[in-house]
Image 1 (cartoon, rainbow, N blue to C red):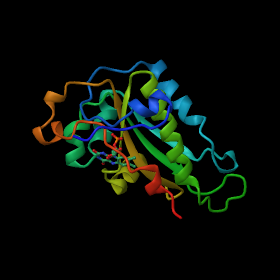
Image 2 (image 1 turned 90 degrees about the vertical axis):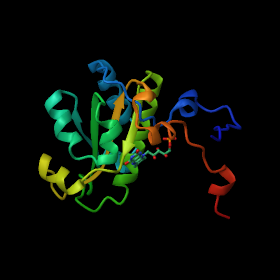
Image 3 (image 1 turned 120 degrees about the horizontal axis):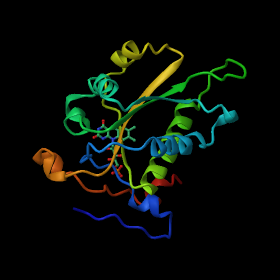
Length: 185
Ligand SMILES: Cc1cc2nc3c(=O)[nH]c(=O)nc-3n(C[C@H](O)[C@H](O)[C@H](O)COP(=O)(O)O)c2cc1C
């Protein structure tokens, strides 16, 4: 396993955050849940439209409803998560009704803020694109005015030995491209 490398003194939460799959069943407090949502709400957005929207699942019935939308491979590890958050975004500007090209960009920033505040509180988060978006629209009566983007699994770190063997082997923080590779010249 290649280890992450940091050349600069960046925020500790950015350095320590990763996307584990070993999530404990232990419930999160409402204070922690509300705090990570507040962090998400303070993301910047085009015209301060705050296009991000969230559907929360934290009690048994709500979790079961959202869990069934996940792909089988995600259900394998996210099935026990005590909190699932579906991230949506409003496609058009409230102030003039025109298409908001930046809505998914802004919702992504919001999820980033959420994940870092969660990390600060010792809570892990793992975003998933692997879920049935059409069924999600039906299940929650989501109109075409919204993009259905992701489901986030959140909770405390659990026991990696309870994961299937192939997922145990992938249970480590992923490395990154170098900054040089990101800059287009
Ligand atoms: C939008 C998005 C969709 C993702 N979808 C999945 C997914 O369906 N299943 C999964 O196990 N991980 C998923 N991931 C997690 C990524 O694989 C992970 O963030 C990436 O490999 C980097 O690893 P790190 O977060 O541990 O640094 C997703 C992440 C994002 C941001």
